[in-house]
Length: 322
Image (cartoon, rainbow, N blue to C red; front, side, top):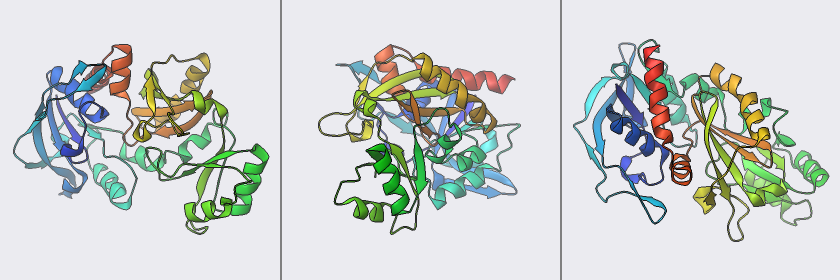
């Protein structure tokens, strides 16, 4: 098969951490051709999505001192060639959030990939539909108490009722802009004003879950089915468990409650063409559904001695044959 990956500039990727690289490595190991491109290298010609694609080869990472390590010159790129994306068997949209206007434009371009020839993972329509904070609201039996508002009074009333809350920008990523809220904080109004851009942009506020101290569980779903999980534990004085802000990655198991949450979200994910997804669970509550460029494969592989990237590529193989 030929697989294309829409990624951020490859020189900025960490082969020992980035999930995109883990899937690329798996595709290469399983004997497939890999091509890479970037969001600003795509377009539509004669009603078809095109891109400047480069063939890519990489040196697989190795495990040393309990961490994945890549060589300094870990990838090689071929010549840039302008070609239709439907020449590929599958295209992985793996550009990191935030979902900006240019990001949305890329999803419109991907609408012009013929799905009968080429699968886009994740579906461009699904990416547009699934804001990573708002999408979780539909699973009301899985989420903690949650509001979305730009109004200080509404937010204060909820936080004072709960005792404490966690504020999340709707377009945030990797823990950026997430704030702990208490009604007694003398900076409360200023925090809301800054976060909502003076009441012009709504934010999500959830009741604070004390179980967050024990970790924020990232569960990797493939076509709605859980294939692995890692527990991200806050370190030092940080209350966020995101790996991007220093959270520690620990081995974990899925509880029956975790599996029930997976069963609740699976039908919606499949309906929306959201094939590769990372959901976040704290203390038995779903807090986010990550669809743009979910990470965690390298950590699960290291902790559980598995190769989730292989499972992803093998799923694409079977899908292409059906």
